[in-house]
Image (cartoon, rainbow, N blue to C red; front, side, top):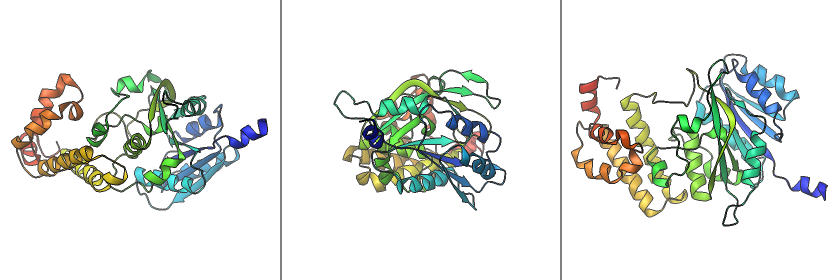
Length: 327
């Protein structure tokens, strides 16, 4: 009976993207070695590092079931994860499980154990979730714990409607999640229009099955100056407009296959039109009814909602004139 149980267990594959990560990578890999539930496969894609990242990965092949793909050219965070997940897709069955890993975090020892038990526990309707995600402790560049909850620090809401995802809000941090390999055929290759890979994965997971939040911290999430994703907006106003245009354009184009319903696709269309116009016109008073009607989705924090609605009526020319070209 024990042999049959072991054979039936889902494999866990970790997809890891690295880029010039030698400063923190060894500690990250040490935390994978120390997992109480060992990974069955670790797929690392190095995104053209110029430091010792690949050498460090090679040193850990004796300690982890680690496959390394070293890209010659840097293609960016999204492309590296897309490559890792595409490789995983060729080696996993649909019921196997996938975890995402960043090079600078530290996994708590029971991360995979906690997430696996939760993804294999049925919901009230008797179905198992397709994705689960936990919380994180926050550490600084030196590894000191500076906050006990990433979820509280970043004001992350665990239950979001699909339209909030369309509007650009993401509540699933990739490194805190575990999802079924059946999603790989839906999410890969990750489109170039995707700005943040976790947002794409969480949106499709929500439409393909149920997503379950877990209160326990499973990672020590490191915040430092070189985070690909972190607190705050790192983009200029024009960059933000363009990112929103490409994101909403993608959702309009691929809405039926995600699948978004008609109301969600209509919302994506309206939002896309708004961002296209905002990148061109100085003032957008005609969008005021749309902004007010969808205020809970577009401006989730009531204390700053009125100010943000008023600012959202300003387009790129007005923002540049009033606040400077780098706004």
